[in-house]
Length: 231
Image (cartoon, rainbow, N blue to C red; front, side):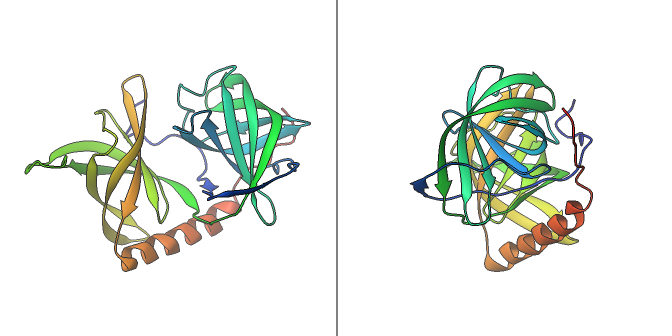
């Protein structure tokens, strides 16, 4: 599948967190709730929805396939919110059937203070200008904007981006054209498709536009998130 092709599925909402503050026993993630699955080294993050909870085993599915590093028997961190904090639990992948993972939660949970930075999945073609430090001329990379929050975004492209490269692109969110810029902070690849996480730097008015877009998407998609009762 081309990185510019939009996959089937519902938009997702997920949250990022800040410092860990205490250890504790984790409640189970909610059926239909949003989770983030990270590899053990915290390099790759994949957003998904919980389709089934059976004891310590959860089945989750994303709008895009999980990165290849999230393979069977891989150790992962699974984060999801409760009423007052963000839970981060250790887990292990039991089964991978794209775009779904079955994960067993194995304990060592942490509660994190929640610094809400909701991220919603979107899918729109963008032309990314990449201008490495010290160079005068930028190269243009055809890509897809796949998710966005008021602190960062995710990109998919055929051409690889490098960690540390400054990037900029124009997109439309909620009917408003925005010029966004930032720096690549993480990368991954699956076959010929490359992914990049970008930390955004932007003016206050642009951040306000993204905040309004995220809230609107959260409100619109919450009602159409499917609820599954069986594995």
